Length: 378
Ligand SMILES: *Cc1c(COP(=O)(O)O)cnc(C)c1O
Image (spheres, rainbow, N blue to C red):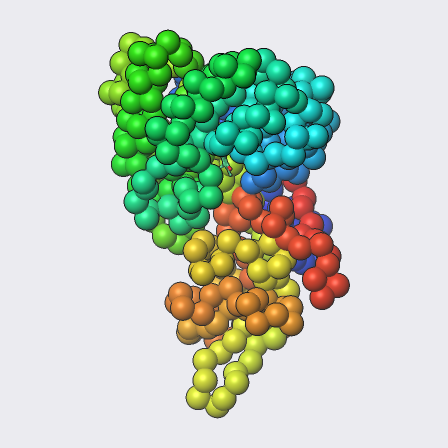
């Protein structure tokens, strides 16, 4: 937790649960990424955290934005991003939304199918389009994004040729190595596949210019992951190896790595209980899967957790951590060993560190009447 967040919590004592984002950390992460990949344009994947203060700060710093819906496009415009710095990166879009994005000035669109290409040809004539690739990835991403989107290399080749015939600008390709990618070794295969497609299409007279390498750089959770520096080095090496002196425009879409470590969630213990005299201790919090911690699904993301009793110096033991709602799935960690102080009691605070990404956006509107996760930017 940063000193600025600590001061905010001490001074304001906000009601819990809440998410507090330190904008200085977001700024620092953006600047560090820009320095480590000076050749790449940064399109912030705003679904990670679209808080207006985050959006307008990044827009002011020159960031571009990767959006997934017409609603996100409108938000990005309101934050001050010009339409030329917005991509419509979802490969599944309503034709009416494509048309509105185009009317608003957006000219960069993703696709991964013939059906989408046909919509784009009608609703966004002449726009720059890039094809999302589906890759055979290892299982080293904690939040994979490789199954639902993207098409095979040979289909991508045919679709990019067809894009030109339909009057679109066959601009490039994209992939995503998986969110919270722990292994920097994944870049080599992904960039290599994309480079093969560039060569294949050049031989057929189609000159691709854009490589969109997606997101994947990690935040700091309990499970060890390669550093941002390691990722940047590996990605750069892969680009040099596979593209040499035919380097395309490179676009990167960080989400988690810009905002994850910038935020923390403060929650409160509602109940500590046992279900049998010899059973495990259950700790129920005022936040759970529906309050913004859905990435604990299958215990995929393992947040670092601290409590207001940690400095007491007492004993700790294993607990099951659960949310406050009346839903059986609202358990955060049961298989994973979380040890919390034995003297933890209702009213104590439990903090989730590095919780700035994919929390406020995933929080439900009012399941059991609970309000959505409140965000403070300091
Ligand atoms: C979610 C998403 C991202 C962001 O990924 P991170 O791993 O959070 O950096 C980037 N690109 C696309 C297309 C996405 O869907």
